Length: 334
Image (cartoon, rainbow, N blue to C red; front, side, top):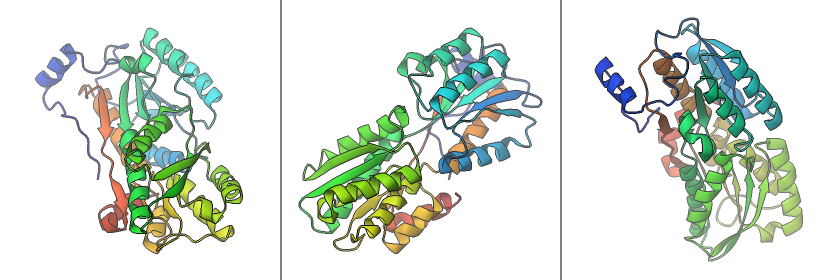
């Protein structure tokens, strides 16, 4: 299920040409690329295992590189401040590559600049870095704008299927400081604007935390009542499912002809089960397994001197009951 929008250099001549034309910006950093992966060290400054998405990504990422001979210095964290400290530590150790998934896009500008000055190449995954340093890194990115659009399409389609000519929508988002979240909300807002009869009345930052998502959802149903909320977007399946539970606890109908329309994202096995049962209308891909495998493949090519393109984008897809068969396997690995 892993697809990219990039062309891969297949022969040395093409690779050299790409390098001469400004391929990976970090390829000249310390001469760390080339010569294979054996014995090289990667500093992994990603999301911590306390995040369900992060845990699945980290496990797959490490497994995919296990046979490559690459040493992984695990500096993952759930705290933005700690991540900045870990990033700076990684720069000082001068590994062959820093791989980072950014909690706070703005706060990591300076560490990325330090890495460039030190000649340490950086690969950003999942969400794009601050535009100030976008040209200083390589990247394997989720298509977050598209993921936001898919969530809005699920909500609009679900409400229209119920015959509603109006509706109130709540959003429980990921960390607002991340461009991952901002880009998704950009896509979501643009798509929702095409159906102005459906109004977003709440947009709450729940920090990619399922427990926080459940608590905030309970508060919102207590505030607005069942009649005051017709649809909900949980930015990951593990954030959408607590909305379903909160709605049930509040005595609200979920799914069906007149119940709450719920969409998720970052598809997980539990979300697929909820779509099958009718409790969730849909989700989108961006599963952690696919992007972890694509990241590992990128690293193998880069450290092996194949000069991959500066940036790769993971193809995303909308998932509903109608398309479930196509994506169930991909979305059920975590």
